[in-house]
Image (cartoon, rainbow, N blue to C red):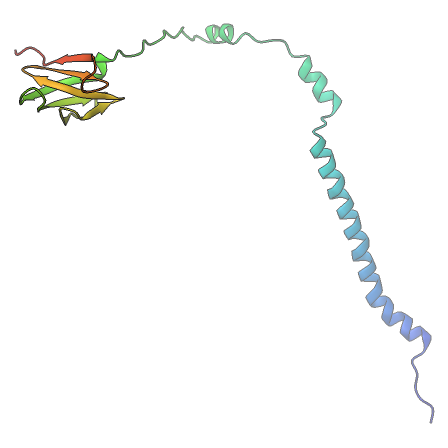
Length: 155
């Protein structure tokens, strides 16, 4: 008996059905890789087309304040920085001796809080003393007074 061997034509046709799609996939993959590589190189250099740079250089200088005036803008007045005394409002005092007492003080327009003598009020200012209708604030208890706050006059 003769063994049945596949003929050369049958082997070539079967392998071409597998090889051609694989070869096509490899070629198109190489094309895509090349396109991505060149695209990344061009974008990394930041080189712009020469027509765009020439058009950008041809634009005239613009005076922003003149453009704003022509559109109806009014000049803005500089707002003065608040003084240290305007940041604090004394709303109540409870005197208790030379190194005792408390005060009700509103800082920067916020709700008033009670502070004892020696407590930090704001920005490195301590309540140094509370006496009668006024309090003194300073950097240290035994240091010079920086600010004196008084209760508003009674109506």
